[in-house]
Length: 126
Image 1 (cartoon, helix red, strand yellow):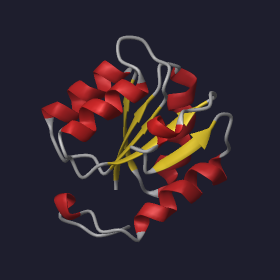
Image 2 (spheres, rainbow, N blue to C red):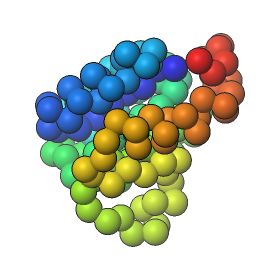
Image 3 (spheres, rainbow, N blue to C red):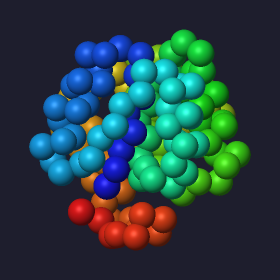
Image 4 (cartoon, one colour):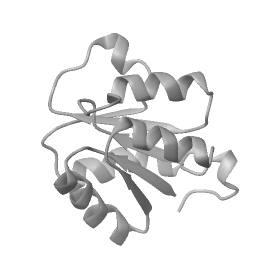
């Protein structure tokens, strides 16, 4: 399973890499919403999951998700933020993590997707 992690705080991206890679996930990072959007558009359907922060420069997580949902990609999206989201904002999410969170909460959230087929990737769950 290939995951794009997007947070403007390098230490958060590093934490996610340190948790996910040993579990067998392939992880790529982006440092703001615009960077994430450009990576996804460069290779559509190459990522299975996006884990994104909300409050970031250039393009917020909510704006990023709005752009991605308009493209109808088969991408699971998890929002991680230290701030509450409106129900309207949560509606486009497949998962939500309130910061701060630990490794077990992150892995539990991702484990929900392991049993789901990812038709675009050509492979099943891990």
